[in-house]
Length: 212
Image (cartoon, rainbow, N blue to C red; front, side):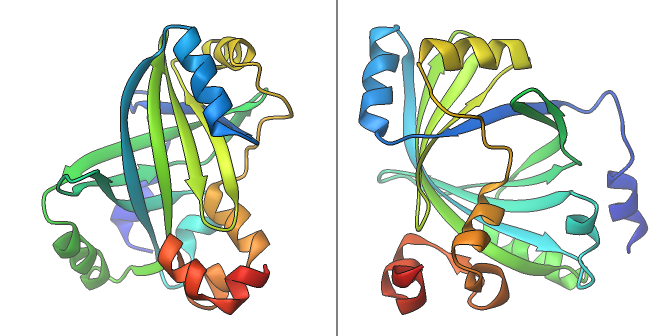
């Protein structure tokens, strides 16, 4: 594994942490109505297309780490790119916490080619439609994914802040700590072992996706 990637796996307390929890939701409209009644502020709608990279031997995934190239497009807007490294997951109650290093990307396609030129390979591309809200110190995302359905993801400054918001939203069920791409692979193994894509268009056209 390249030395640069190995260095990314070493814990650094100065690196910002991502703290989040997600819940399956039967109706995003009901959650959105609750957010509005609580005085939450809408923060826009986007379609996010995420491509995850790894070494050919899978060093990052084996170490519970991730490298994601994201294209985020608002309605009628230009896509915005970002490159994000995520460290191993640490669990606190229903929340998970990870090291996160993120940078904006000007040319998404060029960055993908750069990563491939460095010996990395794209493992899977997944897509979701996301409606974002701000409530207290947390960002609440209402997510829709192909094959999986709808979820509420809460990101905040602490597990306690996230738990408080989940109670206000009256979310039911246990928080889900499994990443979306692993949930998608459980639903349709071809996501990782076949086509490598879980986008709305690809899954709508795929007979395997429709029967999963």
